[in-house]
Length: 410
Image (cartoon, rainbow, N blue to C red; front, side):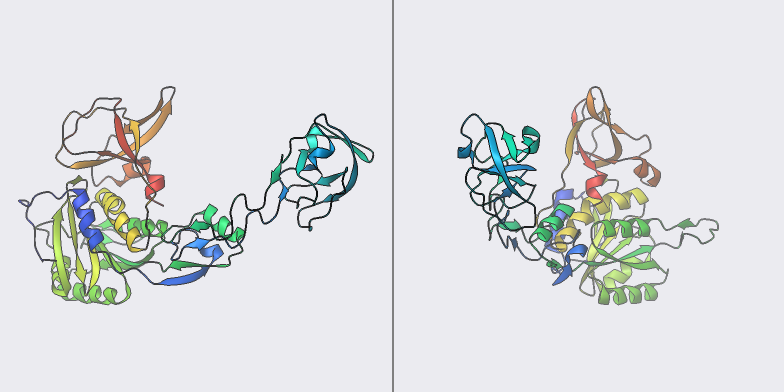
C-alpha cells in the first residue's frame, strides 16, 4: 500500500471501491475460543454446528387431549374406555387396544396409539370418553420430523441470536465455539476536545465521537479499548499509537484526517507504517484515512459527529464484522416511498437522517430538517438513514433506500 497525501484534485472514490480495498486489507481472522452458552449472544460461530439427535426425539403429543388408535373408532367417533394418563417427562407406555389414554403436550405417544384428539373436542363421562371421528395422525409430532441427527443447524461465520442460543440449548450444548472478539482501540484527535464532566473554556468541546464509536463497537460484539484523546505532540502520539498496536487488533481514530489539517496523527501513522488519505464519494463523510500502524490496520474517520456515525456504520461496520468472522451480513436496505422530492442531483452518495412514518396510505420516509454533519441531535431524532445514489433526482412518492438504525446498530 503506498503512502500518499491526497489533495482536493484527487478523484472521489466510490463507496464500493473503498469497501473492496478495505476488505482486502482486513486484519487476520481472530482465533477461536469456547464460551458458555449463556454468553453466546452476538458472538460469531467458529465451527459448523449439527444436530446431535432427532427432534423430536420420540413421537409425542402436540396437544392436551386423548391418545388413541384411529381404527378403534372408525369414521363416526364414539366412546372408548379410559386407560391411565401420560405426561411429559414420563417414558412411553402401552395403550391396550380399544382404549384411550389421557395425554398432555410433549408427552411420549403411547405404543399402539397413532392419534391425539384435543381435549376441547372430547367429553369425559366417568371412565369413558366421547370422541369425535378421528383423523389418523392428528396432533402427533413424529420422531425426527423437525431435525434428524446430523442435520446442519448453524454455519460457521453465523452471528448468534436469541433463537440460535435456544436451538443450541435444545441440543444439550453447554459450550459453543466462537471467534474471539476483535479488539479495537478507539482514540480521538484534537486540542479542543475535553472529557465529559470536565469544565470547558473558550473554544473547547466535549469528545462525543469516542463515546459514539465505543457504543457502536459494543453493539457489534466487538471489544472496545478506550485509548483516550491524542496529545498535540508528535512524539507522544507516535509512542501511544505504537503502544496500542501491541494490544489491539485494529485502531480507529476520529479527526485529523482531512487534507491540510494541522495534526500530528497523520505524521505519526506515516512514521509507524503506511497511510492513505481518501476522498469518499459520500456525504457526510468524504475524508477517510486508512493505513497500518506497526503492522496493525488503522482507520481514520472524519471529525464531525454525524460524519463519524455515517462512516462508522457504512464503511467501518462491514469491514470490522467480516474481520471478526461474519460470513453473511443479514442487514439490507428497505425500499420505501419518499415523502419528499430530490430535485438537485449530487455527485456524492447521500446518507440523510430520516424517520419512517405510517399513515393510512402506508409507510413513507420523511427527512429531518437539519442535515449538517455537526448536528448529532438529528441523528438521535432519526430512526435510520436514507441513501440517495449519486446523480439521482426523484419525485415525492418514488422508492428510496432506507437503512434502519435498528439493523445498523446491532
